[in-house]
Image (cartoon, rainbow, N blue to C red; front, side):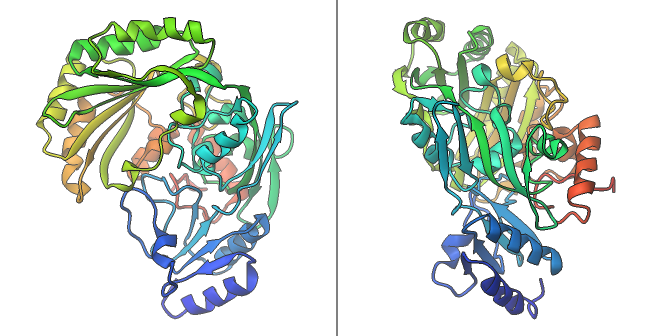
Length: 444
């Protein structure tokens, strides 16, 4: 959008949408444009949609004026896709409706809810849908990218529990996507990110998840402890999902900071976590009976600036674990870290072509990151440490930064790319929805 056309478009937005339109000069503009990971961009306007009608009207206006359109739910995109320089931000945070059907164990949820808000609402009934591990993440972004969280081994990805969604496509029409209505659109939104439309609400399957065995176990970081930890996590019952972060302890040493969640019987859960406690003398141990919703971490470090790489791994042997720890110790970043999530279980039993998330057989999802005010200076270090883990290929779209076409190809390999591009051609032939891990409607 040019400087000359911006005021006219903002006036049209104000006359068209029922929600709030915020522009430079408004007292809350800086707060409205803020997203995570230190990404600093200045949109011409932020539209706080009040309902699906506002979403449709904003999409139509963006298409008519050929504006860059960023869609934001929680603002956690590592690549900063929830904002734009000079374009329009469509902020879904006002779409917070929740309708819970306890008998059918389903819920309709607005795309502006955070994972923490949704989980708190369903927890009243002892029910949950699995999202990620951070309560401030928007359900819209994490659902569309796949959703790897604390219930992934028992109940699969978030998209494996998605029953339907209302989606505004590039023509400004609101469509219901489910297995019978627009099944191609339903396939694409389950893992394909925001490539084919703006989801305004989702219908999820709910599971009985109330008190769990969960919490944080901190162990000294050695190659042997890390490899044994991952072996135990892969051998554990499917009710147990864990996330382990290798990070500095603040005294020059490194630790394994593991979050364990056993979604099942409490006695069985205690037995399942016992092998992890025997790996080494724990530095701290808060694992025990806990409310599931309390294990979702609040907002915090995601507002820092990171250099980051994500990848899938087959395994981490002693050599790779040693190289990882050596690489972390060699960094002069204030916070170098690696995070590893053991997958499998229910996620792996879904066929690879059933959704746009194609990496069902991957045993481990890993990320390497370094905190820095100038993350470009850490890119070579991150690449080197990530390479030492011997990635198997592929990437999870929701964890990708701005890694260009090659990175997106890793997320959507082979036939998945071709099929997603075909759905894109049908619903977004001009690539209006391009601020995402973008699969263009033509192979260009």
